[in-house]
Image (tube, rainbow, N blue to C red; front, top):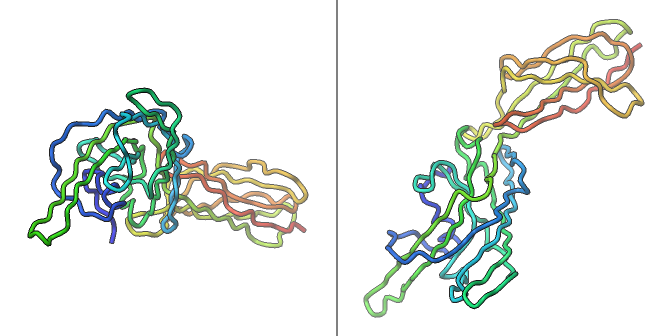
Length: 279
């Protein structure tokens, strides 16, 4: 089942403890400072339709020296969200407990250098084209107080949750693209016309399939047999279903391919070169 936006990111911290989220209660906000937040080394994240993409996050956390974060009843980390901090349209929580190393201490504070992994599962974390956009980062802190011993006829479960954001530059999540190329006829006479077809598709997270990406420019490139690099032949625009089609003159043996540079919502793609024997 696809994940629905929950509007509050406490689920990640609670999931790590195996607890369900009760109603939040008011509490004193801890004095936590998240800084130097970097997601995926500052690069965009490209996600397909099946494989989970693991995204590294680094940050600095400064906390009161008398505040313990044990990741059992207390949790601190960084999540991704889109929308606003109070009304998240979607969020991606830490996959596991962050790794933190103390780098400085004072009488009142502890500063730690932290690393964590955000796991983006397209089947559970992304559910529409709206998710192909710029995401923000937020620091989170939660505490859980649980008494599930019912021998005295009473149980209790409560939590407190705080979030700070946006932090750092966030990250852009893109839809993965695929590209093909086929040059025909093969073999071909020197000077004859070659037709190079292809197809540009991109991940559709709603259906879990790759669908045609129309009205996009792709570059037809050629690499002669024995040459080390490709040269540009012309630019072609994708049509219905993402289909690419153009013609060129056959001059020498070599490989033809299409290259798509990508857009703000979709990653780049390069087709495998298709070899043509010119006679």
